[in-house]
Image (tube, rainbow, N blue to C red; front, side, top):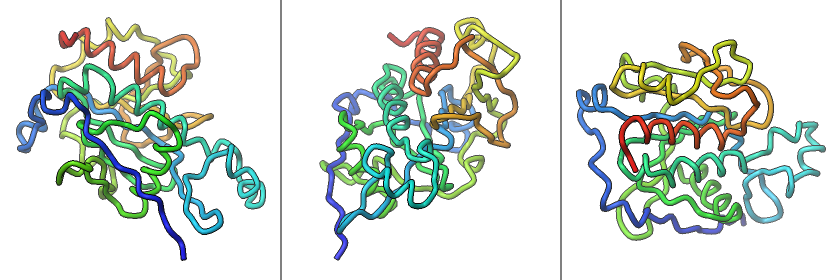
Length: 237
């Protein structure tokens, strides 16, 4: 029989200090926060022997080749690095960040800001396999759901009227984030970051695309720069 190893999900040790997240519709549409969507994330399970694993190009090269699939389809490490940057940030600990992951396989995942992302890729993989099969992960020390699969499309979870900005190094509009962020309205704002190895995000809900560096940056670097800019703008230390 097939078995999945159980990996325990933990709450962030600072979680009890975090401010309350917006609950009511009015709060969700007016309260300031950064909403980051990690688009086209490579999170897909694959069966190897008797167990399921998170498909990645190091461990599953033969499976990818057999199915004539490009190696860049199997880069879950990018999503892991982005999540570490986002969930570890002072911005998140201050209760001003909400993260969604939209996978290449069209699965939408909502992250509870109190989640502590496993440090190692192996543990992260185990947790993601569990999430994709069980559709939610609870904290080991309580009833709180730390990650859950939610209904598509992502737009239904976004505040009405919030600006939706995509990041792309190909955009003609190059901005310095520290100057650009203060020009945006002071409510919730949505930023879309590509969590894949190559190519540009194609998300039809994005209203404008901007470049935040003259260099091509990794998804994790973009996430770090975004958090820094908003921490500076909103006075989070």
